[in-house]
Image (cartoon, rainbow, N blue to C red; front, side, top):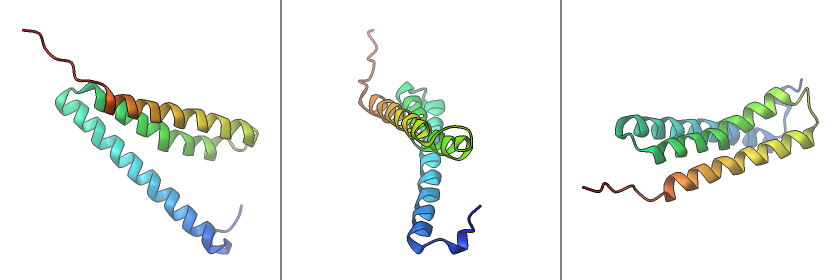
Length: 102
């Protein structure tokens, strides 16, 4: 296990931004989920799920699976999950509103 204090300063800055990105992504997902629960707006559910896929799942996969699987498989899997998450976010933001017919 590498000591964090012995890392190159660029590596420490990268780690700092990775943690900040994780926190911001989770915050956006929580806000989107609250918006879904408050307004019953299904697109916000897609946005929340998209942010979880883009930010949280790849990080957990990288940390938890690196011991078991090869790196190329992990990189491919995280790329697929991030792409799916971005598609969910795009769908949630782009989906036209349903109008009620009276």
